[in-house]
Length: 297
Ligand SMILES: Nc1ncnc2c1ncn2[C@@H]1O[C@H](COP(=O)(O)OP(=O)(O)OP(=O)(O)O)[C@@H](O)[C@H]1O
Ligand SMILES: [Mg+2]
Image (cartoon, rainbow, N blue to C red; front, side, top):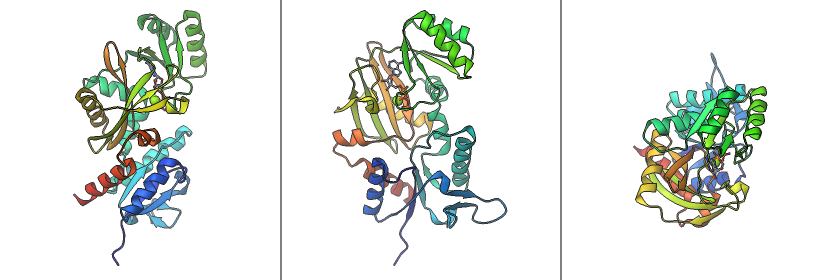
């Protein structure tokens, strides 16, 4: 019997919904999933294997590709090591979804939006600084109705909307005291909904509106997925944004306001449970089929 392809699934929780779906889709395509976590990795210099999983699997010899689920929160050391490890695998020739450089670009809100903006994608007006006085000037410049965010997002938590000058002053000073970068963005009047597009291999495979009760449209904050047929303009914005950040698979979040479409973020490790509820395609299967078609090339 021919050895089946082996595709790694780097996930903190192999039983989380997206990982379960991906495992199911891999098996359906006769691929053997190899699930592991970052703590299962050992990198060796001067001995083999260069990259070991659970101390016995030689990742560069045994895996045909790797799917990366959220790299998670961690100390600076941990996050840097996780990305170094992915870079090492990529230099060793492994096909990774998503490539580490695209993860680096996407998870950092300033890095991603600056790249998008430089390449002609409309993003909300944003001011990023370490200086609380400059942040306060930005509060004024951005119309005294702003959203303050951590540089590295997390499902809507830690994000706040402010329209009071004294509250803004106190928040900026407090964040500065605890050595946070001050990330301030104009509030986009999006009508309590946004658009999520899932791009796989340069193709839009599913999309939805997320309708919320408040202004945060994260599903984890209670927003509900609603099926849509995206216009050509939305499709183009989503595909181009994914391309700019170098993602092979991406969830692109777009805010629609009377001033047009603004890309809020590109998620390089998107969940897809909400999308799956409202779309006919099998999202996990689309991702797996795309990887297999790339491996054949
Ligand atoms: N400038 C803005 N104007 C209006 N609403 C915004 C703005 N920025 C963010 N929001 C709302 O808040 C939600 C959360 O913001 P954002 O997506 O930037 O961070 P996050 O979801 O915490 O990050 P991540 O998706 O990386 O976990 C968005 O989905 C959107 O509904
Ligand atoms: Mg978000």
